[in-house]
Length: 494
RNA sequence: GACCCGUUAGCUCAGUAGGUAGAGCAUUUGACUUUUAAUCAAAGGGUCGGGCGUUCAAAUCGCCCACGGGUCACCA
Image 1 (cartoon, rainbow, N blue to C red):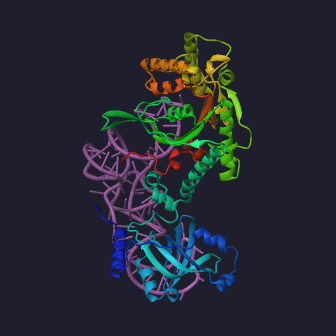
Image 2 (cartoon, protein in one colour):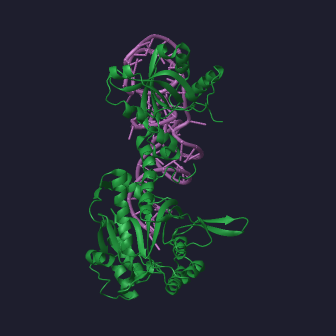
Image 3 (cartoon, rainbow, N blue to C red):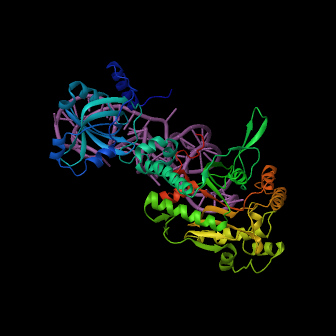
């Protein structure tokens, strides 16, 4: 047990006092009648006299966040999930004993119940006149400072509960995130999509290139991977005839941690039988606009210092055209050999890995010279086939595939393709990936025989899209760090 | 993984020719029946992130470590 501060000691003395008075410091059920917000909206605009005449009764509960104790009457501010409400408590209203109980045992941070009537103070604030004060739960640690709150980023994230008590914005994000997700579900459901859940623990990694977390199953005596994507099982469901499926799920990637990457994050992946790339564009653009209208009722959001207007149609641009524009190299018309491409890469200060092919180099050109300039919502099209192992090729140019990534303010938000459903071609792509892995790309996947077998039963032609939920929440809540939209972001143990 | 910045009272922050550690809020005691960052008076509260070193003397200078923030690298 560490040394107690004087404040902690003082609070424990008050706790003892409650026990002596026969009051459980950690109390019981308390049925409220209103929330803070209920009261404020219900009685807004009424005059002092009207409220006095109506004598409206209420019953509320919450945490004391501000306390103004005076001789025979006091004020305190109660905070519940909806906000703040002021309470007036006086000896004449609650009686000598109840007032003494309040005055001698309450602290900021305590959770209490109040029943009373509504009135307007001289300064015009809607206030609950306490007629009965009920202690519910004792806080034996002091709350962060009432005015500045908790500002230390580390403490805010490690002790999110204090952040939520102190910083309204954190509470707001916590509430907005599920509303965004729910809105997304409503939109997909309205289009006939079925939400499913697929395993987090997998025998094989796949559906993306990323380093996985590995865990061990004791009874099976085998290693399991935490999924790095939901793609493969969802496509098996297309084979099974579900036709329109999506999953909102936690993904795990064993990679670096920074302001846009958390080891576990949430994605939504959606697959539509008989659809293709352009169906996915409609759905992606549609869901984002749907959220902006239904949750936020506005179309302009500030992202990384840029004003982004979602009411405009999203742009479309081809990767090779962008590179031509920025670097003057035309990868489309010139069918460069690998050696030529490597030479161009070196001229342009691009690091070439051992496993690189022309397609990888094209992608590097895009990432180095073009990505950050995609500010307006833009569908980036025409990815090289080598970096897209699960995507149907472009029938007009087999070096590229039918794929798009959605960029806003230089950041990727979605990734979609016309799904590869040819089992022969899929096997070839897996084999190429395996070669890449042998050449040194430790993020390339394995051959997934269970998936190939599913494809052999015929998967309908389909479009699929994956959207980063955390990043979408960051966009809509105008946060620059993923840690601001996760209640409990990954932190090192101290 | 590299570099930069930060870590001082419960919280928010000051604090260099190196010379006994400060404020506001919070706490304790007293006053106060419409306050609202309540006010007034008094008091208590610190191993200055951890370790090592330089020095008569380190919150302050140097080195190492931990954690956090940022930039970059990595990252479909």
